[in-house]
Length: 237
Image (cartoon, rainbow, N blue to C red; front, side, top):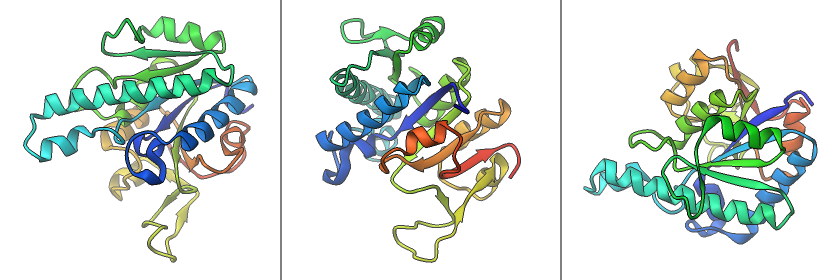
């Protein structure tokens, strides 16, 4: 393995599948199967799941809702997704822990960095829920923060396309794929792979990001083995 410990970032929208909202059972099964395959390689796996399939804080604020209230609702949505993913993984006999930045002791452990690292060392998949516990921060920033806290070697950004393009490959046939980008390239070109706070945090701590297609069978394990898949965002382009 090229990477011993990784953090996988999943969007909430990915869990919705073609239905556009909620949690699609077939997508959940696909994702859990890929994570189970990765865990079986011996890699230590942490996960951050978004909540956009249920509620997006920014979207709520645009309709007049208080931004902090809307963001807290989004954090709770990530807990719902995390519990669904935990259930899907444990049905595959993958030991899993959900750790929440907001106290919900009946359904999740509180986030404690040392405890999270210990779970990873015991080969449990750790799902970080409820963002950072603070409004105005996205789950992208949560992924960057938690990856650095647990000393992960890589952030794996799961998408529906096979990397970063100069424009939407779903709409434009002439879209050009990047094999490698620097953090500054992403910031200067305003590439919407992760928000600027997350990219800056990764840049300051030399945390590489690989953007890849999660829904192509075996891709997640190929990334960990060091195969050239997707687009890598790193110090130098």
